[in-house]
Image 1 (cartoon, rainbow, N blue to C red):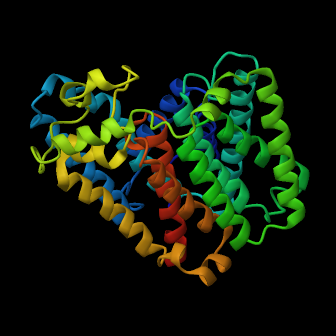
Image 2: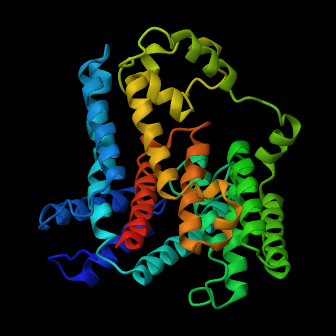
Length: 383
């Protein structure tokens, strides 16, 4: 393992605090991420934890920086540096510091991440129940960020159901799982609910979760969801009445194809949706500020080369995992944490079809944690 010039316990709890801040406090999340980066700057041999995944992330950042200066709307695009810099600096730090810790220490960090995820779900369900919000979400997060985060946490909590060292109580595991699933449902984001259902089914079948455990999770999930809706049924009623509404996504897709041919190599410039979208008057929600699709956004912001770098990152992850997700026997035999992190990355990539996690101040840091954790698991295999 790598070494640090700082006290290892201090660094461990700093990473734990970073993981505990997702959707609890954006200010603390960014503060802890900044501390990790400045600590990384002081390390000797700071690139010893680097691999092709980190280099691809940095290459994507360099290319995105280039397209800022090529942007037709420079004043709009220049803010990208402030908004997205933390994604890359946090990546540099996490790719190093996760390799300072042992496998058991990283598993403890994962458990902190799961437990805090359950707390976040409880916050979202409570805010909905008391009528503070119409769809479950955490403090200032928005329901889309909330549900994407919880889908990732769900993958981990369901995958680690057999780790008795950490979940020595089936009841605790079932309550946390039920809370997290209820939070996803009550966020009422149809795409993320579908992704969660698909991934939960895969995990429950392949990882052979017992019927007793499944029954407890379903019971708690139903009870929590039903109880919350008794207090605040408003938004759910609208969803039931109009389940096929596209939420303006058909208009966004039409706008994408209208613009796709004009700037294929370097895009229009980062964060220029408001400047270039041609059909704003047709949107039911006039507050829409992005393409609601990761891949559309990367392409129109920074062009085909940036999109290819991002897709190559995904291909390299799949290659390193030996294409785990397509190999049934391998999925049954790999460690729970490797299974979970691979499928959680896929969960975020799927969520990118209806959202943009790379450009979210919270989800971008969650994504870089996941690929850093994936890098650590591959590193200890090679080592």
